[in-house]
Amino acid sequence: MEIKQAEFVTSAVKTSQYPQDDIPEVAFVGRSNVGKSSLINTLTNRKKLVKVSQTPGKTRLVNFFIINNVMHFVDLPGYGYAKVSKNERDSWGKTIETYLHNRPQLKKVILLLDSRRVPNEDDILMYDWILHYGYEAVIVLTKVDKLTKNELNKNQKIIAEAIKLPKGAKMYKFSSLKKTGKEELLEGIFKGLIEIEEEQI
Image 1 (cartoon, one colour):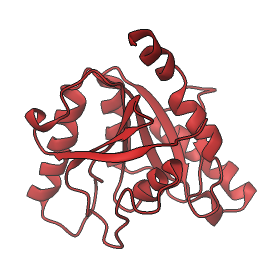
Image 2 (cartoon, rainbow, N blue to C red):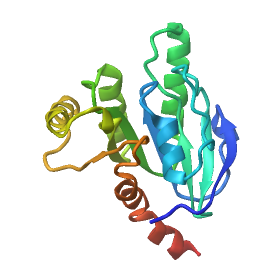
Image 3 (spheres, rainbow, N blue to C red):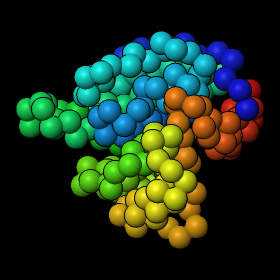
Image 4 (tube, rainbow, N blue to C red):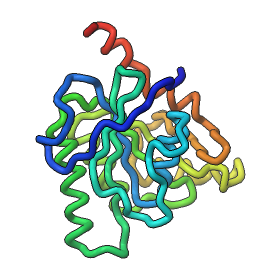
């Protein structure tokens, strides 16, 4: 599977600003500085499609990108950044929940978790939100190049237990630096969505 076309569409805060079409959507979410922007850029073969900031918590809007003219990638605000006010953190959370609650076009949510860290309360809440709203959750462990194979295997079990991932459920391993897991993740993202779109054409 290959992404040959990826373009920015719009940024939004409220539902009235979302694209008004029936194109299937895949949303990307994770705590601040988990590597979300880098992952999307790697998947789309674009270095600057999504701006990569050294300052966590930079993404504050819901950003839509058209992919291969058949689906939208949706970049949601990073959550859990401690160095902003509680009101601002609450605002980002509300922005995310509003999107999850009001978007029938949304088919899958890609939840990024840092492979080096135990999921915190925000990570667990986000996973629970995804399930609560009835979406397919795709779990991606980022920055796997920072760990040895044994460390990664150990952390994978700890992370799965922390979020109460069903036994046998898949977790994708990804490195933007080395492009590890890119093809496998793309296949997992597109699976089931291309058929949906083809039936609508």
